[in-house]
Amino acid sequence: MKLISPSLLSADFGNLQRDIEMLNASECDWLHVDVMDGIFVPNISFGQPIVKHIKKHAQKPLDVHLMIMDPGRYVQDFRDAGAAILTIHYEACHHHDRVLHAIHDAGMKGGVVLNPSSPVSLLEDIIQECDVVLLMSVNPGFGGQKFIENTYNKVRQLRALCDRKNPQCLIEVDGGVNLQNAIKLFEAGADVLVAGNAVFKSDDPAATIHQMKQ
Ligand code: DX5
Ligand code: ZN
Image (cartoon, rainbow, N blue to C red):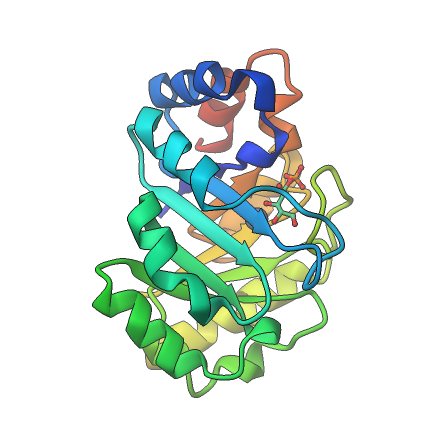
């Protein structure tokens, strides 16, 4: 699969409705929504009230990436705010199995996110419960960072793990994705690419999304 999930972190927060409508009209598949708490990551972005407003305008599924400690506390809140996919960081949660069940019980797709320094082997006993695994290709917290090259190896390792234990699971990559590395990531086995700056800082975001999907 070749899906694109543009990250609204790079949108113009003063013109969110305009930017969401641009994405509605584009070929993107999901809208990536980065929630940061200032503790798990150094930055603070926005919470449920803003997600609710994003949902009002969005015509595509909201792919909500929780960069918050103890994410199990907020599963129902983000469901109510309109999330379709909810991903939680392996490093921010003690009870992955319990929280993924809560996400599924709330009617959402769920998955685990790995930081660049967390090995794919950590997923050995939780991959069966994941609809998606998100591999961070930068250290989470900010848009516009440089892509970490080791991500290609991790995508291949994760592909092998999914083939063995959960072939339905989607592989998503987030951070520093651009038109150059997108092709290589899809070739390595990625299904979903998140792109913030590469989309929003380009002259023609819709055309960039189109090119990324080729
Ligand atoms: C980083 C976020 C990313 C970020 C990606 O912590 O999870 O989703 O917005 O932005 P780019 O594509 O600019 O690296
Ligand atoms: Zn993200």
